[in-house]
Image (cartoon, rainbow, N blue to C red; front, side, top):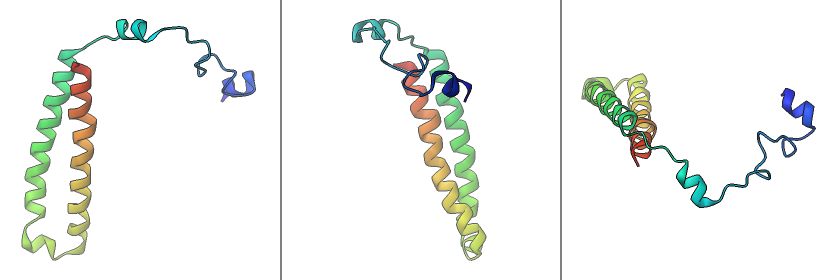
Length: 98
């Protein structure tokens, strides 16, 4: 917020403006740092969490729990959370590796 008041607008702030960026596409590609170890850790953590989550969701998905409305909500939220884990861990790990 201080930067907004100091420069008047975000467009005038040199930290947020792309006007002063003079790097070409080749120079930006050269600055790209790959981190395969960190990527592998992200993917391994994602697979571990997904395995634990799959076991939990398999219990919640049984017939006796699906009859209770709060478990229906928990099951739907768990499925959505699993999709978020795929994006945040597995995809991030892959992008760190390439």
